[in-house]
Amino acid sequence: MSAEETPSVEARPKIEGRLVITDHAIEDIVGWTVLECYGVVGMAAPNLRRGVASLLNFDRLHQGIKVEQAGDQLKIKLYIIVEYGLNVAEVAGNVRSQIAYNVEKMTGKPVGALQIYVQGVRVGE
Image (tube, rainbow, N blue to C red):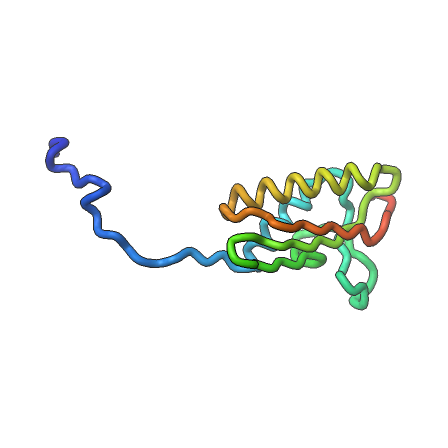
């Protein structure tokens, strides 16, 4: 096939549609990111009525994560447990930058607000 026979991008018909990224999918991205963050040893339920904070694992990936989509921006609330002996502000700052980077990179939506609630401190295991 010569260059003249190859259909160009402009010649292709336009396909209508839209991309919808669910809150659950964004919670997955946040959860996997938090699993990789140094100094975070657990997640906590936002209201703590469900019990004490749990250690991070794959089964409870969404615990302690609340996502709200407002237009093109995301609002994320995160409830974490930090390892005892570490600087809480540094851990939270690292978590904030990692989540903002990964979510924006994977979804294309900017994180407009990211609130991190440190619900406790625990000795790492």
